[in-house]
Image 1 (cartoon, rainbow, N blue to C red):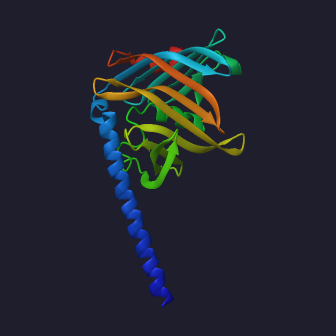
Image 2 (cartoon, helix red, strand yellow):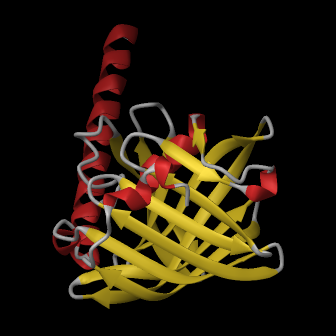
Image 3 (cartoon, rainbow, N blue to C red):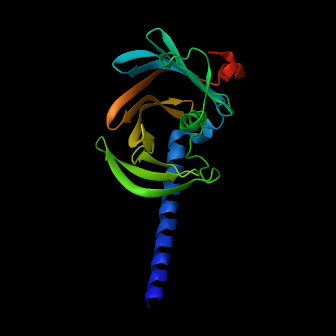
Length: 240
């Protein structure tokens, strides 16, 4: 009897997991439609400029992204320029605040973050092909509005939670837990002020929080879609 009971529990758990996965896919389908994912798939380049607020300072911000998997981010702080980039193969950075005025290769989690940023389609698009799994974890209230919570487990074991507003079906937050100075720390990326660009909606304000405290707020003031960007911009050999 115990064996039958245990098998029954496994079957129920399996059915629940399948159902939650199917529900997650339905939510994802609505989300992609609301975002204009089909339009995004036709976008070849994105260029954005604006401001970045951090440590009580407001500085200039510039981002360029190009298919496939290229990104270049530049921030000016106190007369110094910090660059982070991924050219499709190599992640690199220039950070004078850490004593480096020339391009340096980046490895480990920081390199993975840059690689993720270079993916214009995001981690939720074709998640199965990337070896990830997705499930509906429940719902949570954010700013007085309910959001679906989708748990994405990536092929490397990392877990990311995506919060999709139930009314607009737009992504409003991503939550991850990662080690910072040896201790697990919750990091949140809040997305707001969506603007439509010929059928694709893009958040103009991105706010990053760590341990509940706001670390960086990026506000995009100008966005250009499909303007030409040379591949050399993303190359470590460019030196800028």
